[in-house]
Length: 193
Image (cartoon, rainbow, N blue to C red; front, side, top):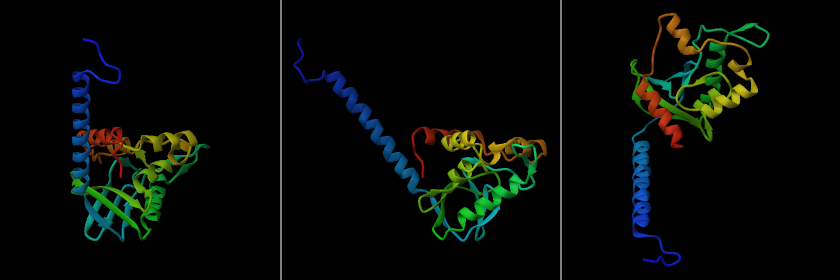
């Protein structure tokens, strides 16, 4: 059977149709997934570099891990600096914008709402990583690569990973493998705020 120019075999057409159908289902599921987000508006209070309070609600920035409040880091000249305090100050500045709001669902083991925050076009979670005052935890790997390349914040010297810092002091609050995996998958799919 000879093929006419411009005509695909039926099995190829059917395969392309099926692939398109599954892609459409994924897009619909992602949109429905986003619509279930709880919206939290300010004013916000920065508790530390990755935790906020708004009213009676505690919020944990999703996909990032900032130094603990009492954590110190070393700059390029081996001088100690209060990186945990600086992370808190940066987060407080970013959420001070009247347009700041957070979207989230799901809670960590401390019952903090897991959120993605933005102020206008600024992705606050990503900005914390991009400015070198938080490390990526499942998402924001591009922002972390840029911060490392430019030696900003934590990347200007040496630091103990916040997770390791907590573990060495018996204050481990693991966000869970499932949450990290879901963040990574969403990042791979290009699904951001």
